[in-house]
Length: 200
Image 1 (cartoon, rainbow, N blue to C red):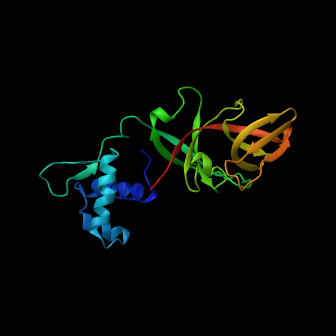
Image 2: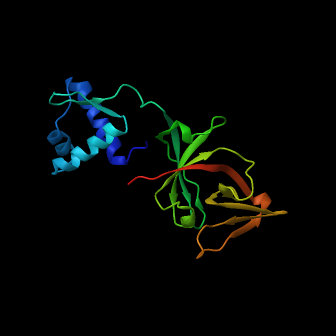
Image 3: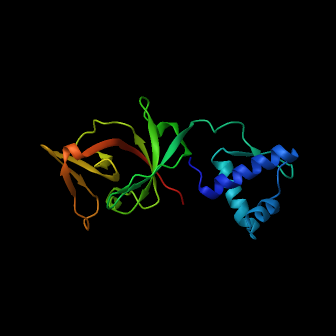
C-alpha cells in the first residue's frame, strides 16, 4: 500500500537511525524529531507502517521496531511524474519521486506511472483532489476510458475520452462542468487510468 508523506518521512528516519546507532529509536525520539508531542500519534504512524509491511516488530523487546528487509512483497515502485488536472487543463509539471503500489494495480505489459490529481472534475468517478492515479502509458484508448490527455502539447487534463470524427471530446464526471472539445490533432493521449490510490 502507498505511504503518506509523513509515513514515508518516519520510515526514512527510522531506517537512518538504525543504520547509525544499531538499534531503533523510541517513540519519544521519533516524536521529538518531527515535533510531535503526542506519543499516540507516533504510535499510530508506526502501526500503519507495520501493517503495510514497511516495519517489523520483535516481540518482548524494547526499541523493537526496525525496517523490514527490502520492499514489502507484492509492491512495485512507480515514478510519480507530477500533477494532472481534473478540472481545467493545467500546464504539465514533472516531479521525480516514486510511489510504491500493489503489483496487481500495475499492467503486466508496458509501462506505468503515477500522477497526483488536482481538481474535482472527475468526482462522480470517485477521483478526488489530492488522489493518486496509476496510469498505463498507452496511446490507443477506447472511447469511454479515463485518460490523461495533453492538449496542444502543454496542458494536461484527466477526462473521459470520446471521439467525434476529427474532433475529440474530453468529458468530465461532474455535472457542473462542461466537456472540452478540440481538434483530434491537438490532443495527445499520455495514458489510461488503471487504478486509484487515496491517502487518508
